[in-house]
Image (cartoon, rainbow, N blue to C red; front, side):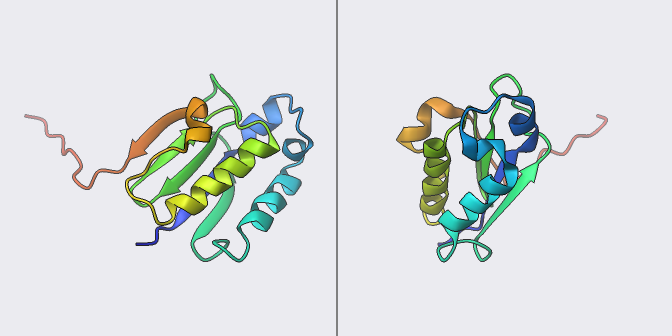
Length: 126
């Protein structure tokens, strides 16, 4: 089963934190890097990339989230080209893999895993 993937990068993190890696200093360059690494494999068909204003992980910064239909993984401190490439590799891997799991290379950067549940709780006034 192939899953559609969305990679979300926190624009606020890039803007509000000092970035030592030149790739992270220029959002257009970062977006081009993701596109180049994913092109021909996922880009535009099964993967999307977008900047979001905030991923609400402000205590750790440089947040990146990989979303799939069945959940998502939020990482923090993705502050180098090497870690960006790890996120891309994981996104490629998660296209086919179940269940949603983090890669060992990114384990120390894991902020949380968010499963999507089929059944939602209905609240009543009783």
